[in-house]
Image 1: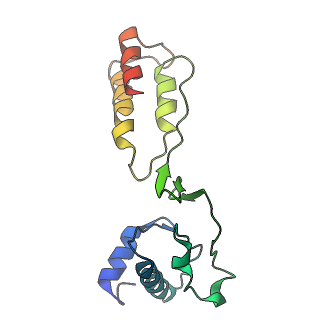
Image 2 (image 1 turned 120 degrees about the vertical axis):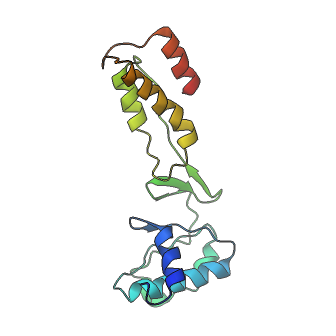
Image 3 (image 1 turned 90 degrees about the horizontal axis):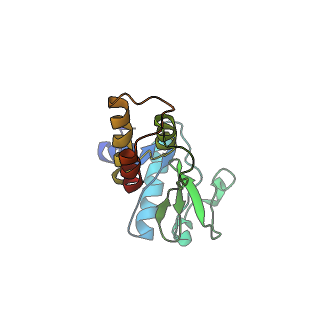
Length: 162
């Protein structure tokens, strides 16, 4: 891939996370140019890009009709798409993170279960999840038992973090 154009190859590598490519561009023309370039670079290595989607559907209009049987060209309004393991609200161009409400006893075990349930592969909610992880770390440092309820002071701290 780098033999074609090292700069574009590096940009492509940074845009991929496992098998999803997520790019933010400012114009429909840029979408056309990038999709064509990526398809050329990757097809030379035996990879076929599929399932193109844009929150500006006409930006995908130039994709070849011959590829529509393998290419999912979504022209219908869709509220949510999953990308990179999280939900993307297309119209507002925002990521959606579903967070469960807190229920039950506040213990080291329950805090760990809650913190582990927060899926954030891109680190976008780290400013909100870091205090929760720090709280769990402090429980571990003080040697809290797995099913021991936390103190009132710790419960208050959890409420301010949560």
